[in-house]
Amino acid sequence: GDSVTQMEGPVTLSEEAFLTINCTYTATGYPSLFWYVQYPGEGLQLLLKATKADDKGSNKGFEATYRKETTSFHLEKGSVQVSDSAVYFCALRYTGNQFYFGTGTSLTVIP
Amino acid sequence: EPEVTQTPSHQVTQMGQEVILRCVPISNHLYFYWYRQILGQKVEFLVSFYNNEISEKSEIFDDQFSVERPDGSNFTLKIRSTKLEDSAMYFCASSAAGGNSPLHFGNGTRLTVT
Image 1 (tube, rainbow over the protein chains, first blue to last red):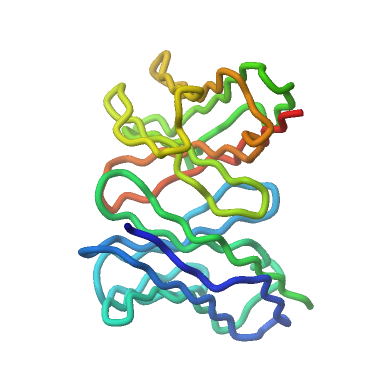
Image 2 (image 1 turned 45 degrees about the vertical axis):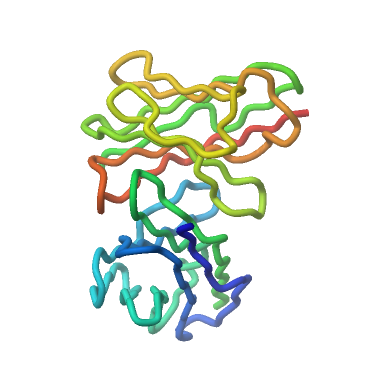
């Protein structure tokens, strides 16, 4: 069935470091792909999305490119800040109304 | 920006008791969802609701669970007889449409069953 596998955490980076969180998916056809972020004590917020192959989603300095050939949607940011500390979830939506979420990757950015 | 709101933020209940978790989705949204997240684990789909009926549900959503949209604004999740393993964070979400529309989540209700 449809599923998402993302890089296990926790990830700890120094401020201004480069971030990559890997996400790969399994789905028949062409799902829409999303990254959600969960700040401490809050719900999940949409960070970015891509709806077809080669689309690049971007927001707040984060980017992810929908790679059909590698079934991946890796999240990247060139220079992380302390305020980026959160849990990041990769998700896909294909048939029906279900979203499938990865297990989440906890990111801590230290000054 | 419109928000999904959930109440209460934390609910403590005894095993075997009924609980109702409440959500107010974004007003012009048509699709409604419940997800749960057991501490440290994956965000799991429970149920989706559209046009006043359940459109999909997962294996987790057994006879102990029910959802209702009692009026034009609220969307509730009822657990009839809670078990210890129901302890989790429950998230309500809504979306404007199907297909590529993102989900908008509430801040969640932490349910603790003792």
